[in-house]
Length: 251
Image 1: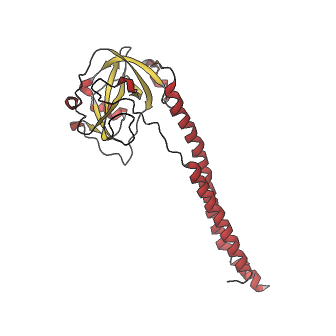
Image 2: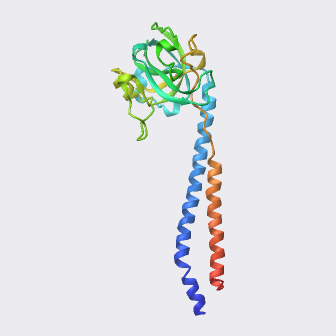
Image 3: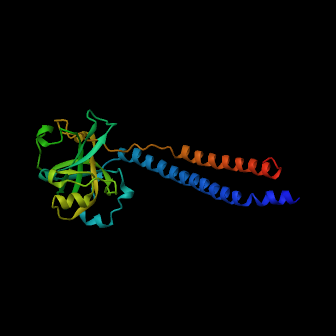
């Protein structure tokens, strides 16, 4: 009896530790299920909204209250004039392009002065490294008022891993509205979102290559959740076997 009580007491600390780890593993599984629901909703939005009929872009007066998150990937119609002398090159890598060009290169991001007032940063498309300069793109820039179709995209925040921009060489690493506007000395009102042009807006020269909006999202959260739950189950089984052997004097 004394040996049995001693064996039971010896299980207290391992049991507490196993319980803590078990709760952590289950919590991670639950978190992945919540991420799964979020990712499914995001994929649906990314796939369905671009197929909607374009609506006229919101007026600048409405931008302070504009809900960007609720409008992601929504097609809009813009009418305005590009400020080509203030275009920015934002470095990217495009491994799964829809068009002809892919690999390392730049988004050609240009401010569009709307005919109705206000300015919005427009991602005109992708140009491969070495062909992102205007002369290399063989593009004849049009500064006349034009009508375009594009998708609403969010401001791109910088992170601690984002390289430092090099405005002197027109090289940037994030489509951050504040940073681009400051570097190009743009004044408001500025849209709180950016626009990705659709494929048909690609110029005759072929560059920049529009229609490359990134709306493909890997969704492995169910696998991750099952992995965490599986580890939790394995831990429970191992501890039960360990406890049984300890209580029966097997070790």
